[in-house]
Every structure is written in structure tokens, then in C-alpha cells.
Amino acid sequence: MSQTLQQIPLTRIDGSAATLADYQGKVLLVVNVASKCGLTKQYAGLEQLYRSKQAEGFAVLGFPANNFKQQEPGSDAEIASFCSTEYDVTFPLFSKLSVAGDDQHPLYAALTSAQPKARDTDAFRAKLSERGLAPEHEQDVLWNFEKFLIGRDGKVVDRFSPDIVADDSRLVEAIDRELSKA
Image (cartoon, rainbow, N blue to C red):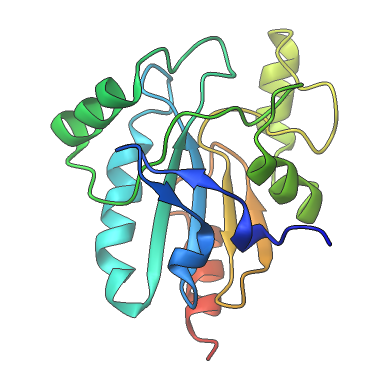
């Protein structure tokens, strides 16, 4: 019997064990984050989104990853401190993991399998290609701050390009649509 998305073992940034089942019934935005990336300032928008919709049953889950140009070199303690100090992050953060490659974490294998292509990636993919940084496979995570939306039922319902920010209408409308479902 294969493991469901909710059963995949995870580790919170404080070292405690977790699974997505801990957030059962919530709408989740799973984001691979990095502290030394040109997109790092998205932490502010993600935190604002989390605070504005948390009471409705929404959570942002941050997964630090060092897959792209080593833009997340810190330890879990350093990452937690950075997020707290620089962006006042209160949404749940998890232990650093790999989102791509041979050591891809089972969570990201399941997410990319469930939603093989992110929405509106053409421009971002073209920028990466110009720099020789495009991923090998179409379904691979493109870069830091790619976003997966999981509905209350635990199913992956959408995937967003790294350059789609937290207040982008495409993302907000998708979140609101999921939050409106019983």
C-alpha cells in the first residue's frame, strides 16, 4: 500500500516530527523557500497572506531547500532565526529538504507527481534557460518559492510558478476557491 501525501514523514524546523495530516481540513500552500534568493522577499507576502487567511482554515508551510545555486546554505536554526528576525515569519517552517534531483524528498516527489506543471511558468522558465538553469524535466520544481496548493481534502489542486507572488490574483483566487469549499 502506498503512502498518501498526508502520511509522508516530515520534520519541523525545531526537529519535531510532523506530517501534513497535522493540518487536516485546512487549505495549504506548500512553498520551497530560501534565504539568499532574489525571491526571498516573498517571505513578507507569504506571512501577510498567512495572517490574513489563517482564521479561515489556511496555512502556508515553508520548506527550506538548497537545490538552486546553494541559496539556502544555513542550518535549520539559522534559517529559523533569519525568518523570524528578517520577516517575522509565524507560519510553520520545516527542516531543510531537497525538492529536486536524486535526493528529492518524498513530499516533493508526491507533489510534482500530483501536479506535474506549474501555472504560468513560460517567462520564468525562459529566464532560467537563458542562464543555463532550466530544470531537466518538465515536472521538476523550477526554482525557490514555487507554490503547491492543497485543498481541504488533502489533494493537490494547483501549482504556481516561483514568480507568482502571494498577493497575485491568480493565487489568491485559487486559495479563496478552496477555502469556500466545505
